[in-house]
Amino acid sequence: MVLCSPPSRRPDEARGRLEHPAETRADDLWSAISIRLRDTLTETTYDTWFGQAQPRSYNGEQLVVEVPNDFTRDWIEGHFLDLVTLAAGETATTGAVVRFTVGERVAQRPAPAQQEHPPVRIEAQAPPKDMLPHREATDVELNPKYTFDLFVIGSSNRFAHAAALAVAEAPAQAYNPLFIYGGTGLGKTHLLQAIGHYVRQHSRRLTTRYVTSETFMNEFIDAVRDRGARIEGFKRRYRNYDILLVDDIQFIEGKERIQEEFFHTFNSLYEGGAQIVLTSDRPPREIATLEERLRSRFEWGLLTDIQAPDLETRIAILRKRVETEGLAIDDPEVLTFIAGRVSANIRELEGALTRVVAFSSLTDRPLTVELAEDVLRDVYPQGEAAPEVTIPRIQEAVSQRFGVTLDELVSPRRSQAVAYPRQVAMYLSRELTDASLTMIGKQFGGRDHTTVIHAKDKITRLIREDRSVYNLVQELTARIKQAR
Image (tube, rainbow, N blue to C red; front, side, top):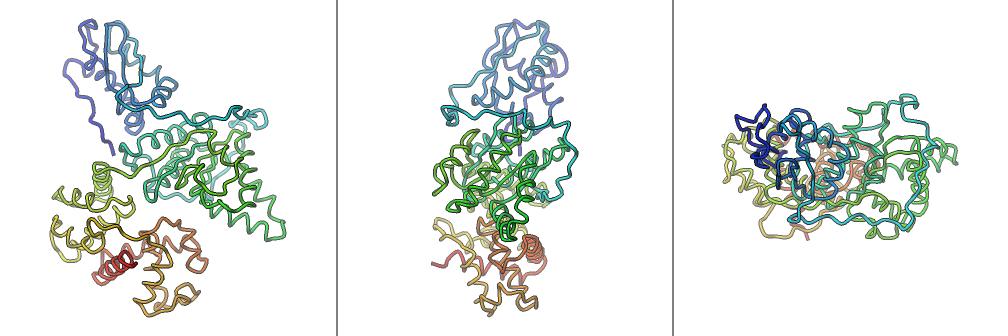
C-alpha cells in the first residue's frame, strides 16, 4: 500500500542526537525526525500525512519542510505539531523549530465552495458524547476487506484517502460533511466503510451506520407504507447516529419525498454534532433534479474526487491483493501485464487477477505473461472500448446460455436448474457493473443483499475449483462485453 520510500537510516543519527545542528543538512535532520515519527505513529497515519513531506532548508534553528497541499499542512499543524516538535528536540541539540510549507511544485487543491453565510453549529442541543448511553451499532454491515490498511494509496486517490482518515480520526471536527465522488469501482465504498471500521475500532462509544441511498429509500418507503405508524421510529433511528455513511447518494435524484426526508435527517444530524459522509458518481452540481437546499448542504464541508488509478497504482493494488491472499506469483511481469490490460476500475482489475490465478491452478500451468494473455484476450480485448454492461444484459445472456426464461431467473423458485444460473448472473452483476448489493438483489426478484453475497462467494470459489465453471464465466463475460 505504501508508495513512498522510507527515510534512510544513517548509523550516526538513527537513534542519537545530531550534535552539530549548524552543519546538519535538512535531509539528515528530517530523516532523523521521521524515524521517531514512524516509531510513534501507525504506518497508515505516517504515510498519509508525512509520506510526501520533503525537507527544503535548515539554518541551524528552523527546519522548513514542504508538504503537497494546504489540507495536509493544516492537519499536521493541528494534530501532530507537538509530536514533531518533541521529535525535533530529541534530535537536534538546539531543539530545532519545524515549519511546514506548501510546495509550489505541487498544484494546490482549490478550497471547497463556501456559502456566504455558513451554517451555525448548534452544539448546545446535543449532550456531550461522553454523556450518551452506549449503543451497539448492530445493523452496520461492513466488508472486512474495506479498511484503511488494505487501501492502496496513489496519486489518483491520495487526497480522498487523507480526508477520509481525517474524518475517521476526528468525527465532526475535520470536514463535515465529507463528499467523495468518482467513477465506478475506484474505491469510494472502500473509503466509506474504512471510516466505519476505524471508528468502531477506536471510538466504540460512537454509533455508526453505513447504508446505500437505496436502503435509505426502501426503509423510508416501508415506514410510510405502514400508514405512517413506523415513520417516527424511522426518523429517530436515522437521526440518532453519531456517524452516518451514505453510499451512492446520486440515486435520490428525482425523488422529491426522499430528498425532503433526507434534508431533515441531514439537518438533525449536523446540528446535533454528528458526522456525515456521502459518496456519489458525480459532484453535487452535476446530480440532476437535486434540490438546491440539499446541493448547498452537500457542499458545506469538503468535496474530494477519486480518479482512475494510474499504471503504478494498479500494479500496487494487485501486489496488495497477492500479499493479502497469500498467492504465489513468481514472475512480477504478470501483474504488470494485468494492470496494463485492465484499467477500467479496481473491481475488474482484481477480477482479472482472480481468473488468471484460477486458470493456472485448474490447468497446472505456471503463472506467466503468456498465460495471462491467453486468459484475458477475449474478456479484456486490448484497444477496444467495451459497451456499457447492465444487469438486464447479464440476465439475458445467462438466460440464453442456460435455457431458462427471464421470469424464471427472478422468480422465487429454488430448484438447482434455476438457482445456479441465478447465482452466476448475480456474480457477474456484481463484478461487471457498479450496482450495489441491494440493487442487484432487487433486480433478481427483490432478494436480500445477503443472497447476493452468498452467490458471489460461491461462484468465486467454484471458479477456482471447477474448470467448467471457470470456462462458463469466461464465456459469459466475453459474450456480455462484446454484445452491442
